[in-house]
Length: 293
Ligand code: AMP
Ligand code: FE
Ligand code: FE
Ligand code: ZN
Image 1 (tube, rainbow, N blue to C red):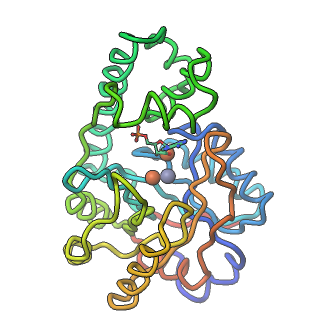
Image 2 (image 1 turned 180 degrees about the vertical axis):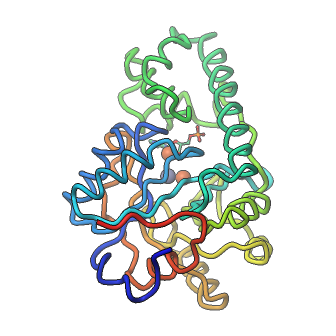
Image 3 (image 1 turned 90 degrees about the vertical axis):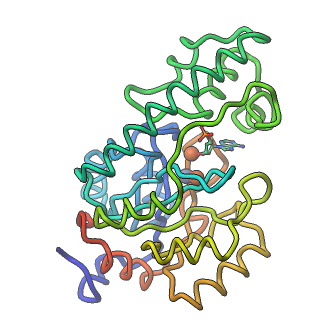
């Protein structure tokens, strides 16, 4: 497998290791996501759709065509107590049976949960499951963003942001949770599949606010390798705590956009990951290889 300092010149330049396509809740096919990143000057990127690797092949072809490096990735849904925890996973084996089984379980739980949310909403608003299907591309991992798009299409919300602040907000009576594995188990599964687990946006405000340091320490014991500190939703205080934790435990630190196409204002390259950190990820990943131009 490629990796190490000898490969570094191949990914010189801004890295953005967290972007979404139509394979989950982004609004563009993988090829266009790669093109958008390239247009914004990103030279190494990772497509990290929620709970799926369906976009990898298309993203790889686009990366080769445009001359950028692709780190195969995913954002795995997990939880800690009531919190939704998102675990970025890089360079894992996409055929690993245990991880695949968990991804399938999450994806089907998300589907049932989305149907329940829509059934709840339909008590008060003119929204049907077909409206949501019309906003969902093929076998995409279904989430509230697709319901948001359906609400927008029905004129019940101005855009995704408004839908999330209104009808889709957990404080509203329509919200339903979905099954997701405990964060410790998610970390173990990714590590066992040869992947590099990194907690996504660990320091957001509100309901999914940061896990206590003792929980991070347990995750590190299970194989957690990094934290995404550069993310627009991390609080200033949370970033300070994370930076200190990263220093103490020699964690990989990443920065990324969490681009969702038109679904969010996030722009590719708005936060970046250094070449040194990318090199550490490549060195640690054993389940799949980076795609070099
Ligand atoms: P879910 O996992 O189905 O509960 O939906 C959460 C997803 O919705 C996250 O992955 C985000 O990408 C997206 N999301 C959360 N808040 C917003 C927002 N205010 N505007 C657009 N997308 C959002
Ligand atoms: Fe998302
Ligand atoms: Fe996320
Ligand atoms: Zn994301």
